[in-house]
Length: 215
Image (cartoon, rainbow, N blue to C red; front, side, top):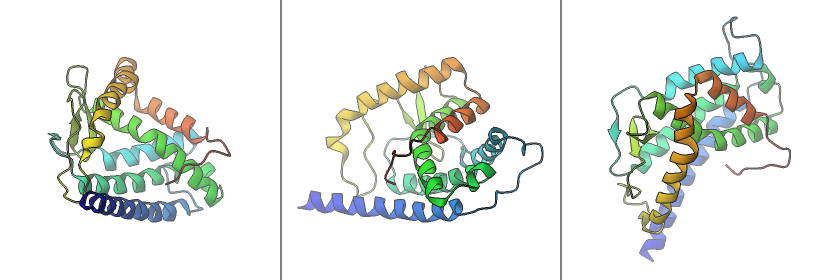
């Protein structure tokens, strides 16, 4: 009974953060007038998206020395995610092609791009901050990094979060896929910020009409 109560409490806290995220994001997506943008960038959709991403990146990139994660802080992670979602929504509001859409279409495109782009951006930022094949780590929230060479997923410091004993076996395959399918290719390609924004544009406009993701 105690384990079930812990799991329900954890779910309630997580859902509260996600609900707050959604309300904040929906407020930004409801804008119908594009955010101001320098004339130099106000030429094509990709240039406008590039400017929006540069503003976003200044807000979410780490601004102090890294610390290695030994235990996960669920509250800190959720708080950063709320900020990430909010700033991420603002990227697209610099683009008149996006602000001209109906609100339901904006939400659908945002959800799809958010879902697919989060890990790509986190890995890109990790590499920009020094992650390499020898020091294989990934930024999670703020300036906290997870060691992708570690054999186990860190437990949470929060008492209301269910211990990850059941999911620890999944950490190895997840970690290996991150390294093989994302970290190493991005290192080898030496991905630039412009190329990252181009990937985001491709993800954004590749959403199918019947494709739905629950936020």
